[in-house]
Length: 104
Image (cartoon, rainbow, N blue to C red; front, side, top):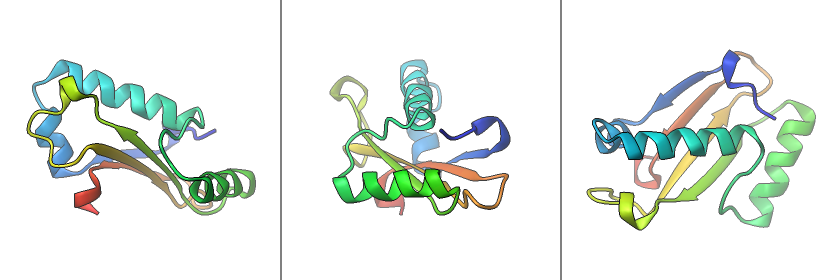
């Protein structure tokens, strides 16, 4: 489990612009962050799931989650999915970034 209390959380400019002023989008992003910290990584393949598990077990590496954007929230969004990536588990405080795949 990731402790976001001791992490920096950033959003890409694209995600920020998409969510700014839209309470439902912001609430959905918070829900995604909560899922990410609870080891519910959304729609990732078995390889990434195994890598996430290793990273948490060893406190080393990074965690990636992918969550499909619900259709009713998608307006103006360049991607159908949002990614959440927590880097440097071995070097607290970690950094968690919320971004669209096209931001990567």
